[in-house]
Image (cartoon, rainbow over all chains, first blue to last red; front, side, top):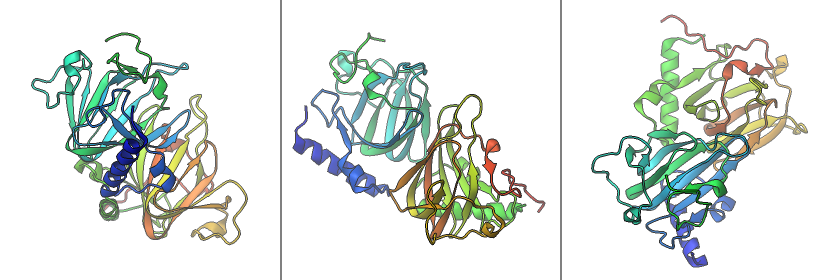
Length: 182
Length: 182
């Protein structure tokens, strides 16, 4: 749970980070920045700040802001409504982001999220994205990501976003229905 | 037709404009910038510089660079492969872009493209986009756009891009750029 003051403070920090990266928002977009703590009440460690530019039945585009060391927790996007589920491309615009997905586990990964010891993170194939680097995550594929010490701005280009369908590995995350551990 | 030297010069100008807007490209992306003259050999008047970030069967994202006063000529994206055709959202990042689409014609529009007197432009509903402004064009809808006097950077978020299917109003237009000798 986040207080109104915590949300507004996080929105202000996100606006500042986006402005530093040269990304211009409208007043309405600034006010509508989503601050997600995934129900864990540890926003600095586990959270995400999101600007949704467009989200239609076919296309979605967002900017994701991660504070230094902040983690978007492990999840996947399942099939829905006769689609294979959300396909998304992450493009790093500023800072550095460590993206983890299915595949050969990386030896000595750079990140160790706060709830990793509880089994909330199961995929450890590390992809490091700096400004201009990008990676596409297919539907129904586990992934999570953490910003480096300077934070990160990541553009997301995807099919329709339906956050309510997201399946998180951590059973404490209340944002989505948990259907089982991967 | 464009010479190799003209293409490289246009790529350099596009890279510079993107850098000014704070947009970072990889070396490979810089070299792959598409310079489109639409077969009219008047790039300064009618043309477009394009960075393709991703283009899958489901999602496409690009940066469009328009030089000062440069026009992307009137076209639409028809249905193909049992899809309704390309849906695209244009988000202005820097400069100013005048977007024209179907709808009530604007009295005294700001733009008058070079080949307008030949009947190459038939939709005149004007939408002015500055940094942070955006507009979504449904499939199979005529549109064209021209940059203001400082040029423009426009992010495009869309479904799959299949340029070869684009239908241009101007019968002189061919979408593929022909590269001349030398």
